[in-house]
Image 1 (cartoon, one colour):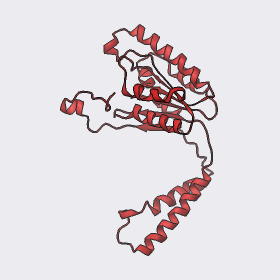
Image 2: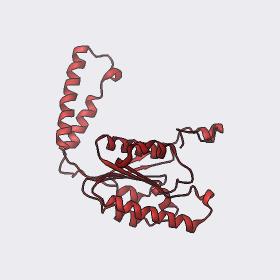
Image 3: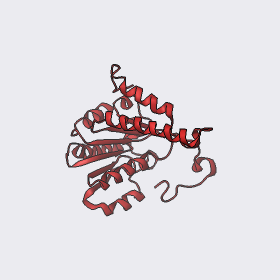
Image 4: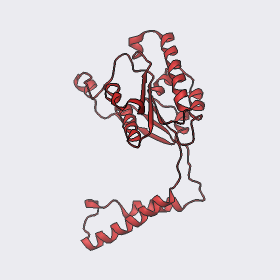
Length: 230
């Protein structure tokens, strides 16, 4: 796995351990007077200030949202909204979805030139029933994605369900990794979809795995509902 902190630079690790040892506060620290509590939180603030001061790098990130649980696309779109809020441009390319119009594509229209939304897919494999057509659509999606990845006017590119497209064998994983590396220095790229490989994970800077605990579709027979699934 990737480790971007050199072994010789133990200063950051020491600060992290000090912060963890002091704790977050609140009622997680029982049996302590208010005076001792304030002193402890004062030390925590000093450590936190130093942690932020030491971490002063800025770079374009490769971000992966994977796992069996819900929320991968939702989290990516939330990041997109934040980016727009800072007056940057965002591009979203959906690789598998597209056989229907999801709520996000309707809602995001209000952002006009700040956001470009493309859904090239025609739905899940059991809906399209045509592998060659699916492969062609995925490759068309990728060509469009690369044009945004290389464009310095776009701060964030979201490649929604591209990990599924890789897993299905519709596009080569190395081609995706190499293409993402064509981005400008401060451009972020988010990849979503279940089943990210170790190679893909190792290429990323930030990886989140959504864990499925309960799902009403499987457990209660509840259908996909507006605003929750699409």
